[in-house]
Each structure stands twice: as C-alpha cells, then as structure tokens.
Length: 101
Image (cartoon, rainbow, N blue to C red):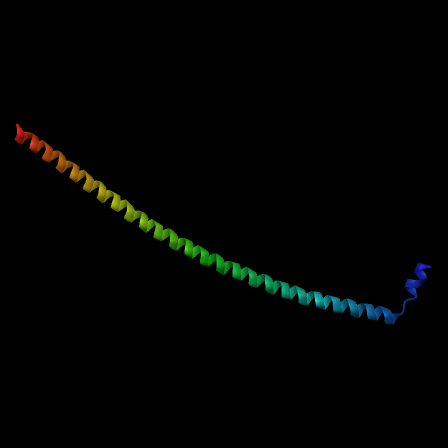
C-alpha cells in the first residue's frame, strides 16, 4: 500500500532529503547571484557602447553640418563670381557694340 510506505519512511531519510533540498536551494541562490552580476555587467557594457556610439554620431553630425555650411558658402561665392563675370561680359559686349557704331 502506497500510504503505508510513505508514512513508514524513516526520519533519517526525511532529514537527508531536507539537506539535499537546502543544498539545491543554496546552489540556486548562488547561480541567481551570478546571473544578476552577469546581467548587470552586460547592461553596463551596453550603456557604455551606446554612449560611445551616440557621441560618435553627434560628432559626425556636427562635422557634416560644418561641411554643409562650407559648401553652401562656396556655392554662394561661385554664384557671385559667375554673376559678376556675366555682368562684366555683358558690359564689355555692350561697350564693344557701342564702339563699333
């Protein structure tokens, strides 16, 4: 009968089982602590990497904005130069035209 077997199990066996379970529990607690440490380390590493990449991105954006400003300035200068030369050519042509008459 199953009920008689379980009730007839010795106190020594029960004590042994409790010790075994306590050992299992201690092992689990230890592993949990290790996992938490590992997790925390990984989180810290991720945060550092994110900060680095974020800063690199910011620097890149600043550089690109600077270059963009320089390019816009260069374009403006070229337009001015082109406009001035065009005007000079137009003036000299009209002057030549007037001289020829």
